[in-house]
Length: 52
Length: 243
Image (cartoon, rainbow over all chains, first blue to last red; front, top):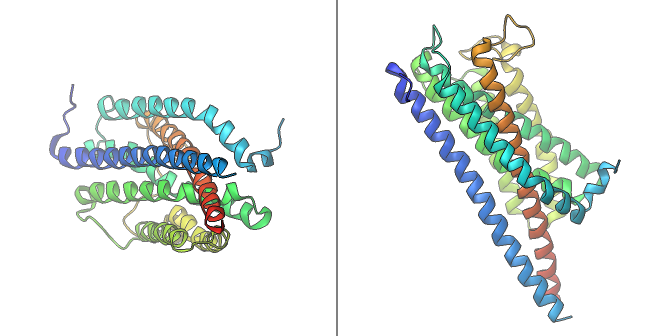
């Protein structure tokens, strides 16, 4: 159940919204980049093994 | 017990952090969810600040992490300067965007909180100003890493920048005590029970702080692994180009 935030509801809710969006974006960006770099390195290592 | 310097070996670092990462991620998510739900839904309004006191659960942990992330980068940079371990330089690089986001959260929630309480979004108060400068240092630090192609040169120069920026990281923590003026109040957390926030706000706040710390560690581990792999990839590609 939503607490009664009174006249400060906008301030409280926007603080939570901004923070949660920024944290989720940081986590998503970090995970996506980690996967991308890992896949790229696997490819480069495979190529370099093949070429001796 | 294994020496801490064993983790300067990139392979060992990746092996160890790979085992820790799932636990850290789950623990940080659980702690954050408990802290934020407890703070948002189950704490009363403050007699002076009303419901805006609920912003404390984001503002204080983010501000703490903004400062401590820079101090972690300082330690890692010093290890790089003294012992030349690549993993430590890459860990500092990995922590910078996390610290920058924490600084933005602290600045944004501070402005949103300040508007109804102080009647202004921003004031050139010692703590606010030193935090803004810390944010600019984060941006400069990340830009310097991105601008220099040679990894060792980039690590050297960013380490020096990190040493200089540490002054502002410390200032942003102690500015209120040094100048004792401006709008920002003193520290919310204190070992002196009289000065500490009331228990009803303090306990969920501890959960939120623990959640932010665990999230920071998890993200730095993940991002350091990424930087180690990216560095190895650059080395292999350079070798390929040489034929």
